[in-house]
Structures are given as C-alpha cells and as structure tokens.
Length: 258
Image (cartoon, rainbow, N blue to C red; front, top):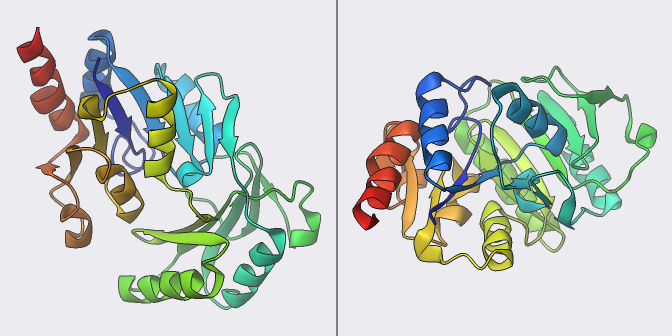
C-alpha cells in the first residue's frame, strides 16, 4: 500500500480550487488502493468543507501544522495548544504590522484582524477577551506588502523569544505559530505509527517551509519547480504539479510492483 501525505494550498489546491488534473490523479491513486492524508495549516472546518465539495476520500487529517490530528470523521486523536499568555504576547509584539490575523482551535476559528483569503466559519472578534475557547493551537498571520526577508526575521524573533512554548513557520507570505514540537512531519509520523506504515511506502508533497518536516521523514519527498530554493533543497524530487507526482512517480511504482 502506497501512502501519500499532501499539503493543500499551493500543492493540491491553487487559489482554493482543486483543478481537474490534480483531482483525477488523486482519484486514480485512491482507486489503486492508496492511503491518503491531508497535511495542512488549515483547521478542520475549512478542510472538511473542501473534502465535501470535491467528494474526496481522506483517511487522516494532519491539521494546524501538526497541532491537531484527526481521523477521517474529524475526531481528534492528538492536539496541543499554545499558552494563552504567549498568544497575547506574540500578538502584542506584532500589532503594528498590517496582517490578516486569525486564531484556531481546530474546530473554532477566530478572525481578529483583516479579511480572510478563503472561506471559513470565522467568528469575528475585536479583542482576545472575546475568545471563549482559550485552547489556541495555531496563530495565523498573513502579511501584506512585506518582503520575505522581513518575514524570516519575524519568524526568527518569535522562535528566539517564545521558543520554549512555540514553533514559528513561514509559508510564503504567511507565518504560522504552533505549539513547540508540532509539525507536519511529526503529525505524519503519528499516523504512520498508528497505522504501522513503512516509511518506504510514504510519499510527501508540499510547496513551502512548513512542509520540510514531511520531506525529512521519507526518501519519497516532492516539491515544485517554482518553489523557493530553500524549500527545493530539502526535497528529493522536483515536479511541475501534484498530478505529475502521482501519475509519473507513485502510480508507476505501483504498476512496477504489480
């Protein structure tokens, strides 16, 4: 059995749309007996809507960059949260930046600042005092009109000041802050250990720095030609699309075994 762990935005999806070539390739993979997990920074409610829209069969969800892992029905199997005092301190440190700022529990999404880039059931709040569920598992900060070097500097500052409690990742123009020790790679490993999956059967694909932890756990790692060099240097295979990865690599390997 081949296992595929895929990022969503910029990988399987583009501009929040699943194009036919990627959808067809994924359906071929699943029809061949493939085991599929989504590994993303998004929360469950956002991903569940996409899965239902496109009628996808997903075996596991690694969400919020590994801070939340659920089964195919959305039942939480693992979850970590950031201390709320550090949530407050991090947002205070970044209050002068022009960002779209949201906070995620995995099942509840709070929009503190800006207009979201994709549809979600955000509860608009004006201050952190309005949050009823203090178990925040991800802070998402989407930056406008800042260069990547500045975003890298912000990530470094957050990791230096709050590194005992959180890990900060840059995903192109977005910064995600999650509980320390959480990553997509650790989330995928959790699923592999739970399902007794051999890492030689695992394929991972993504387009940004928060996907590198997935690349590091298997030789079958994939990213894209147009990605930043700092991402490409960690992947063992470079492709032009998700469909190319599935059809030219994974399914060809399945055929050769058969």
